[in-house]
Length: 82
Image 1: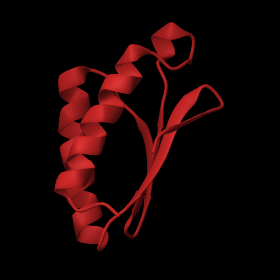
Image 2 (image 1 turned 60 degrees about the vertical axis):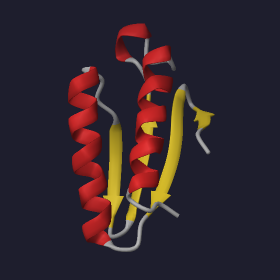
Image 3 (image 1 turned 120 degrees about the vertical axis):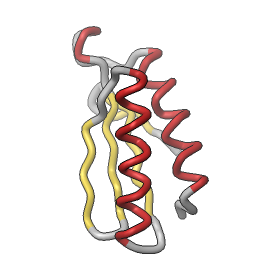
């Protein structure tokens, strides 16, 4: 579940292993490019953490963040996120 913290939508996903987590990040990168909206993220082994906020909206959460969050959720489900 995405939560709003410090003017950002935040969520952490866990995958079976690093290879699956990396494939997920690759797919998210392609989606972010299509949307021209790039997330902050961090990865360690099978865990990927996101913070979404819109710089053009004063570093607050916007509809663009919610749309990207929905796309990330769909990709996470396809990659078997836990």
